Amino acid sequence: MLKQVEGSRAVAETIALCRPEVVCAYPITPQTHIVEAVGEMVREGTLAPCEFINVESEFSALSVAIGASAGGARAYTATASQGLLFMAEAVFNAAGMGLPIVMTVANRAIGAPINIWNDQSDSMALRDSGWLQLYATSNQEAVDLHIIAFRLAEAVSLPVMVCMDGFVLTHAYERVDIPEQAEVDAYLPGFEPRQLLDPAEPVTMGAMVGPEAFTEVRYLAHVRQMQALELLPTLAREFEARFGRDSGCLIQRYRSEDADTIVVALGSVVGTLQEVIDTLRDAGHAVGVLAIRAFRPFPLAEVHDALVDSKRVIVLERAFAVGQGGIVADSVRKALQGLPAPIHTVVAGLGGRPITQASLRGMIERGMRDELPSVTFLDLQTDVVERALERERTSRRSGPVAEGVLKDLGVKAMQYV
Image (cartoon, rainbow, N blue to C red; front, side, top):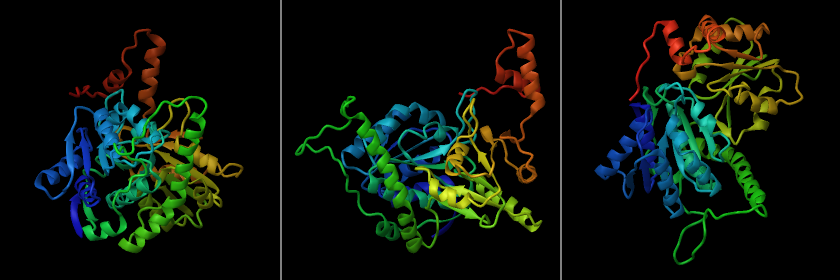
């Protein structure tokens, strides 16, 4: 059914269609609207049977989901930013135990300094935790990927993060096609756990494992990720056949088949990039976009095939590894190992800074002229950076960096409570 609806509400209604039996929640901006709406549906009885559990922290939220999943219940939670980091120990435990939990990550910057706006630093920080990671470019994809996520998680017995950009998607109102319950039921069967805590058949879960077996256990986690890589295209084809939309495969190509320059990106910025690419195409430039939907497992072969004929690749990053550079670019570089095309990292939109069409067009045009360095920070205010560095050169007590930068910009520091 087509609805003009907030992204968070659309995801909440979709979660209800997936029939979770336990939802555990702790509020943190910008994911709060999702679990609030799910809680309302549980209270009203429109989502039943389902136990909605309010907890005292994000660590508790995922811990409850772990217990619920181990007990044979379909479990769901959501978080963002510092909340994801607070549950980090449980994130690794859920993956290591092979529990098919689905969690929405409403992507938001992590501090310090404190920032509540969007980038992808939070999910990228836990990219190697063992969770599958799917990234939505629109609210329609966010809806569809959650349905696929439950099916995928339970097929390979691994947890899945569905990542959607905070505020840009979670708080945006747009037209979304939310499926009917019968359609979701036909695509997503009831949960049959691979492992189960059952007093009639006692087992140990999360046991201590020493050197004699730890490598094998970790290798099997890798095998399951590779199984997910093979399975996702099949699930996507089934989804498209049933719902009439392509929302769940590994990558999405846009005007890239004959492109000399291809921009690689994840998340909502893909839509802006597509508009810029259309403008550049109208001007006669051979450019395209490659959206990566599945970041873990990373589709090396598919990315290779999509980029193999390009003359240059620009990877637009919404997070970066301090002291190293591009995170996504490292994986793209691995996919193109041995090929001559240069790979440029462009870090953009950190902490919610707008990524404008004008900035993107200028960046791509520089790339087409081979004027981009290996790592670029889009719209970086170099004069502000130089003033901060000058303070450090001239005074031992140069003061807090963030507050100094704000003072240079004439902005009063905000207090976040």
